[in-house]
Length: 256
Image (cartoon, rainbow, N blue to C red; front, side, top):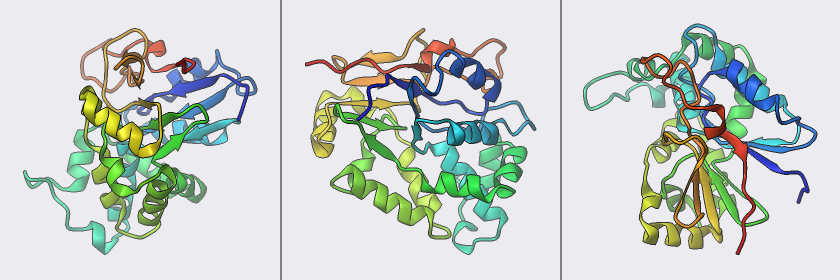
């Protein structure tokens, strides 16, 4: 339990310079910060901005983080480069290799090299959970999908399963498959079942981009999306990123 306001940081996707700018308004001593994952894929090419963003999150005091699909994707490619047998045969339906798909989604070899050369950072990523349940009943996760409920009856059980996969060579890909889906919470019945499954009152997520100026609130305040297209480098279109406040913002208090 903390009396500090909670700052949510959605999908950074490699834009570490903008992350520094965003956090400058929120001193780490005065706020609890929760990162929603996707530190990687989408930064300035060759700059290893994803690794730098992950290091920033790791060293920021009073902060926690959950894993995103792009973080897991990097770990899959890293294992492939190391020759982990279980990760070696996967291809898309179109025949693309993991590396080809990763590069097509703004993967950065500089990020991969930076994580490979920093065992402490890699270990920190592998130790991150999929979910957090805050004291007020807010469920924090990366995706706006309900597949995490398949992994266990509680937040702790889900995170234990994910921890097992991320520390077993070749099993990161299994975890990645649970972080792809979107839009589940647009269905009120699916949302109700999901919240009841984990004993939560609302869910906060990133993963699915929105075009609002602030985080998008739906389902009578029970769903809040924080992926406001933060990275200036993700889209091939110039000036296509969203405002900082669409991705980095204080978590509203949960009321009755």
